[in-house]
Each structure stands twice: as structure tokens, then as C-alpha cells.
Image (cartoon, rainbow, N blue to C red; front, top):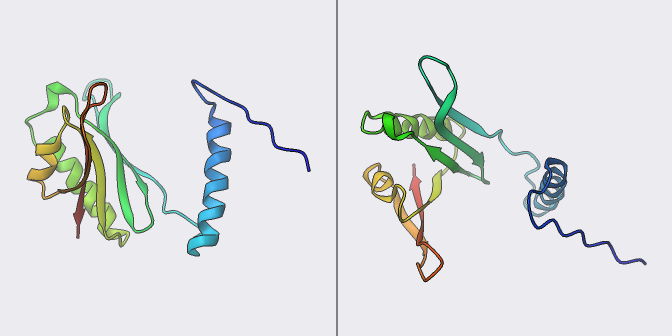
Length: 143
């Protein structure tokens, strides 16, 4: 048997390659868990009122019984208006409607840890800050 080729992509992997990895991992996970389908990802967009351009919002994925918030961004000019809380409430509603146990996410020290804690999220893990690495926190909210 010939060994497979190792193809190193040190920057900017293409979408087809990422799709192939995802498909292979999903097939392995299905065999291990008996779960063959993910719920679809979901997003909540914040749009500029004049241009309708997406300027912020939330993107979340399925995580075997948990929703994982991969991205949450709110432009500086829209902060302090309750939009972040509203977006998170909507994400929690979607997660509850899908029957998830809860939501988890991660945030860096310079981002929004106090915001999430105010919404009832608790830290369940952390990566310490050392020279060259910023502290990162993992938070969850169980329903």
C-alpha cells in the first residue's frame, strides 16, 4: 500500500479542502455517536439601517446537544443599546427550540467576558495568558 500524500497548506486553505475535512470528520463522528446529521448553523444579523449591509451579529453551529457561538460582533457605534443582549436572547431561543442543553462560547480577555457573565454564562475553562498568548475563557449557559 502506498502512503498518502501530505499536502501542507500553511495559509489560506481553500473551501473545498475544508469541506472535505468536515465531511470526513462528520462521517467518523456519525459512526461513533449514531448521530449523522447536524442541525443547520444559524445566524442573527445586525444590518446598517441605510444600506442593509451586515455590520455585525452572531453565527452559531451545532455541537452534539449544545449550540456553539462561533462569532459575535457588535460595532462600537451600536454598543450600549441592548442589541448584544437581544441577539444573545434570540440565539438562546433558537437553541431552546432545537432542544439543546445550552450554549457555549469562548472569548478573549480583551473581549466580552463580563457581558456574557451578566447574561448568566459561567466560566468552565480557561487558557492562561503568557507572553505571546492572550488569556481565553470558555463560558456556558445551561438551560
